[in-house]
Image (cartoon, rainbow, N blue to C red):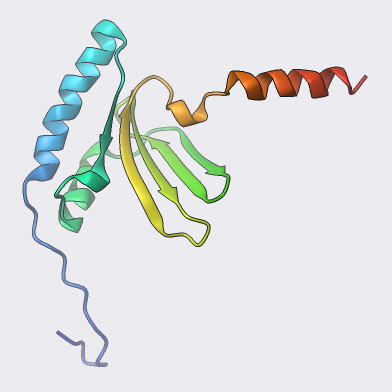
Amino acid sequence: MKTPLNLPIEIAAPSTGMAQAVLHELAGHLQQLIESGKTEVIDLTSLPMSSSDKQQLETQLGKGEVDITLTTIGESRIFETAYSGIWWIRHYTADQHLIAELIEICSVPQIIKSHPADMQQALSRLKNTH
């Protein structure tokens, strides 16, 4: 389909109902986190979700107060949803191609936590500053 200016129109893939299934799964995982401290990760890239499903899921989860960008080889964008304990994580290559999209149910996403070896190295550097 083309617009009057002969530009392509992107037609959204129809919803499959996966957003509602993921929301139901998230409720169970959040309850498990609260009761036992057990964390979970849902890999959205491995699910048969249409672009409409992902948009619906992101809209229903909303955005919370925390939004983080990590810069390593590529960027990782992490935001807490409007539901405390449910985090949306996107990992990109250096040229901004999405390589992984996850929802992590936890207090703090694993990728944000400082690694013990990194903290040891930081301590050594800090001690050498004075």
